[in-house]
Length: 133
Image (cartoon, rainbow, N blue to C red):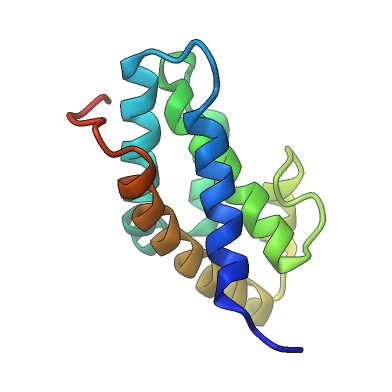
């Protein structure tokens, strides 16, 4: 099997582009989306994959933009890793039950994806500035 880095980039570009182009999104949601996409790597490297997945369910309604990005992250991770149900409500249990090598490998893939999210967020959300908690 040949590795093509465009696979990763394309998946994330399409995911963020889809989020960015959703109708009826105010500036607050767009700022949250961009901020979360840029911060994914730091969060993941600091807190880990299980906490990021738990964060997805913990984000409240006024953090809709952040939650959308975390969901897209896990959808991309599921697609590229081939691990079923990672992006849905069973995902935390799946992460918990992976053996150590699988979990560490998935975390490595997740960190690579998080870097791509950060890069593409800057490109796709150009013109969206400021912080929106």
